Picture 1 (spheres, helix red, strand yellow):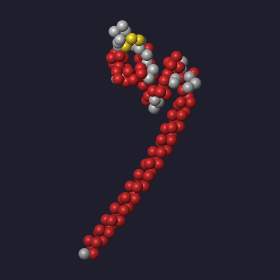
Picture 2 (cartoon, one colour):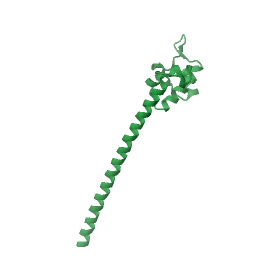
Picture 3 (cartoon, rainbow, N blue to C red):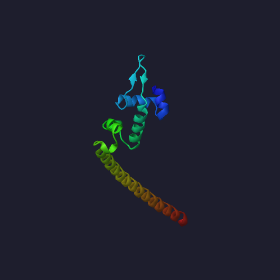
Picture 4 (cartoon, rainbow, N blue to C red):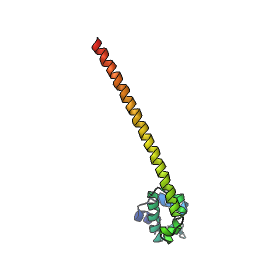
Length: 130
């Protein structure tokens, strides 16, 4: 199948497929005219790449175990679990950082609201005193 056909079947852009090829994730054959020729297995490969990208993995990380998971189940690929654990720990740290930022913003907003309330109260007092 051509790169356009693979793109249509998988819903992945031609540009992304070329990027996957540069990253060594997919390997098409080349026809005599230089066009890429993908085997039907390329669809499964691209679907696997999409799955792992949706888990937040990079193409570099995926390249480290993709060949293994295409031949075996994930459970039999030693590279997968440590990578998942590392990614999960990273996400947990990001969540903590975002929660701290969220709390900082709430505190600043509350301080601004209090200051606005004080200013409004002073302004009302000035108008009543006239």
